[in-house]
Image (cartoon, rainbow, N blue to C red; front, side, top):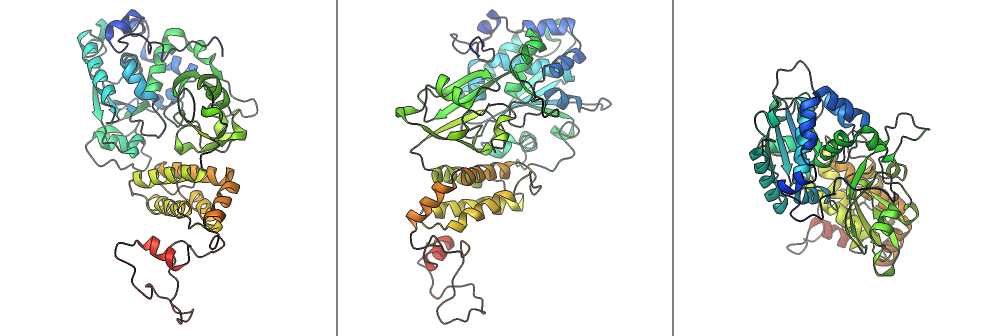
Length: 481
């Protein structure tokens, strides 16, 4: 760990690191020249496969395996989409890469397109990344002028054009089929799979979609060798032969209650505690950590007793989280209420749901309403069980939605409730001392006095004041339910 040398962020501290002159002075594009002269596309794919490179965008899917799904007998054209949407809260790895070293990303895209025989690539960029967009556009112009893009790159018979597409600021565009729909000018609704993008993707043609950090790793695999890449990270555990291992460097974005927030390139498998204390300078104000969002809020949280969890593709799953995610680590100190984390997470996912799938469209806002009621002093102990029930029945994992947005909303809820139930129950008792034992479902309208219990009614005895929501109205009528 002590002799690890960053490669993905090696140019970050250099003056004008985003320019072609600086990138070439450090050996930039030399790997591309060597590959185009001496290696075939199959050689590149085999090297990436041997390295064990897995996607850095959240799912951790083997990169070379995804490339292999492109149909060999298809007449084309094929497309490459580099995903730089990065709308996961707490994540800013791609932004720093594109602002500080866009040419490294471009070289990775060119090499990956060469390996997959792709002649046209799109970079899907989050719209709010204004500086990254400007520097990326400037880098593309420099690459065209230097002969690294366009026809007959570096004197070879390989040609490639790259275009930047700025998304409209929707979290759902991070899902690969939602991303494709956005590039095509459509509303970014994810679609059911199969067919997968490698069979039917952008404009109905076979398409490879990779995260920009994943593509940048390709440069260093081909430059330094697959054995070098596999020497970094953690091998698969002996007791699980199906696990693929977690190899190579990873960029972690560290934020929250730490003394030195920022981006840190480290080997996969670093313990979460080391990231916080050795690189982040520890928890601020001399406090202790209560919880840590391990890889963006969609992955769930680690408790203070789980900080030795290795940050790789296996560790967070064993600790009850969805996975490593994007590597967006958020530290919460001992004074931060867990109910606030749940509130912010549920509010975000309820706002970002595209509404296409009923379990997500209805379940995520309903979970937010429950958490909002708890936070506002109208919670009941039974609400925690309702939240767990919702979280177990929405998302790809139980097979009820097209994309994983609902899974993200579920995991932040279930990890908060399961790991901090005692704190949440205490909060409910303190803030709703007269109603925390009630069991009526949230939003239930009680029958007016004198109405027999067997008669159902949809309306209260008196109309609520103008502007009062149905949720607050029902809560008032049930005495804080």
